[in-house]
Structure formats: C-alpha cells, structure tokens
Image (cartoon, rainbow, N blue to C red):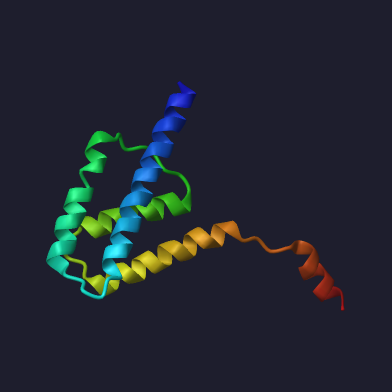
Length: 110
C-alpha cells in the first residue's frame, strides 16, 4: 500500500510541475494574450481530472499547488502570476543550496 501512495504522490507532483512549467512559458511570451492563456490553462487542467489529489507536506509542493490554482483563477493578471512564479522558483532553488557550516565558523574565528 505504501508504494502505491508514493506512486500517486510522485505522479501528482509531476503533473503539477508540468502544468506550472507550461504556465510560466506562456506567461513569459512576448505575444502574451490573456484569453489564449486562460484557454490553455483550462485545457491543461484536464490532466488533474485523471489524477487523485494527494496530501502535500513540503513548502515547495504546497506553493506549487497554490500556483497552479492561481493560474486557474480568472481574477489574476500576467504581472501577478509572473511574480508568483518567480517566488516559486526561488523557493525551489532555496531548498537545493545549503551553507557550509565550517566556512561560517572559520570566518567567525578570525
């Protein structure tokens, strides 16, 4: 049962990332059209009809899910969505870098 839950979780997160990448690419186009963007996002949202929503516990995956929901929201404009996408990428990159504690201690000693 546990492997099946992991499989569903990975599949759901990959679908969220695929949707988010598609949205970001559409938002950054020079010939951006809000109506075409809305149509494309509704078409891409059909991916989630096949998948079961899974509980997400990390900050990045929660932010990713929120961004996807915001892309489907009709009230937000291009500029706001780009700001949210940049914050999402910043959060993703923040998790991959860690400070080296030895370097910090070494600098404090001198």
